[in-house]
Image (tube, rainbow, N blue to C red; front, side, top):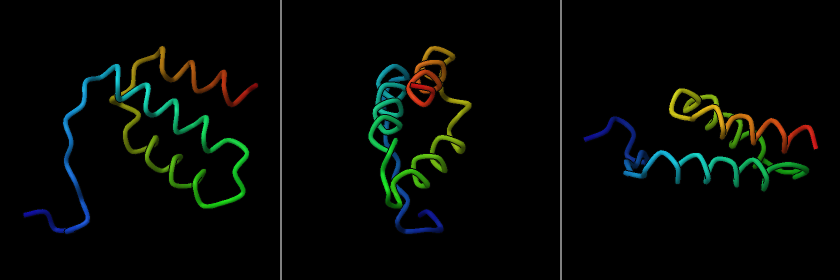
Amino acid sequence: MPENENVISISVNSDDFCFICTCAVRYALGRQSYAPSIVISFLQEHMAQMDIRAVSAMIREIEA
């Protein structure tokens, strides 16, 4: 049993994971709420699982 009962484990393929992360970035951009900080923390924690295409797409979204 996980130390933190609020932790969940999911199985998702790499392409879907990258797409969901990109969508989260798009959602968080421009928000005046807690969403950007949560998305940033999640992305930092899972950066190693993302491919260069996804990271590049997120950078383009942020720059635009």
